[in-house]
Image (cartoon, rainbow, N blue to C red; front, side, top):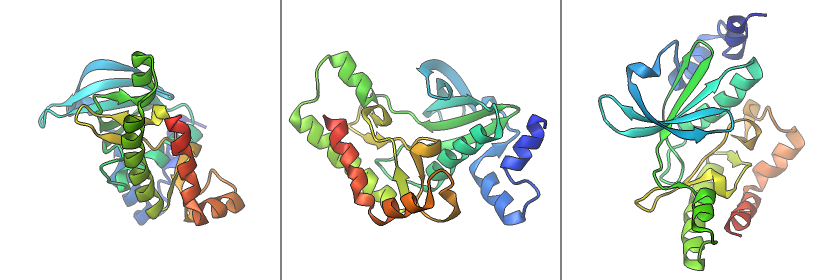
Length: 217
């Protein structure tokens, strides 16, 4: 089966106008991000590929550009979970998705650029843990972001310092990850988790706050 055939299968092309419209609202198909964004530097390697620093050619704002090579349909499906979540969830303590592009076998996600970096990297550079006031500040904003996710029936299943980004203005941003680490807590979108486990988590979402304490430690 060709890659294009797999791509059509994952995006349910031909499976109904409403479904196609929802997916096209969240991703720009067959569109080159280089037409709108200039890659001005490399930020590092993410779990699924390279991460670049990009600047919008018109608005001049910066973004973190995640470039992922689409190897198979399951890989693409995992990324669509993250895109769907970030497209619908808007909160000061959740990293924002600006745009998503699909071109050939590449998927690009332009997300909010957090110039302070990831919390775990900051602690490594400082070579010491956070102070109690710093921990209290970070945890306050993390729990506000988590509460908003839970109200919107989204579970964050990979809460750790590496998924907490900071800005130089004092912003604290949670990063919902692709695949099993972050997923919707209702309906058919729970395709990565057993139904009985999903029901327990959805009914008692506050238990996910335990990860906040582990991150602070």
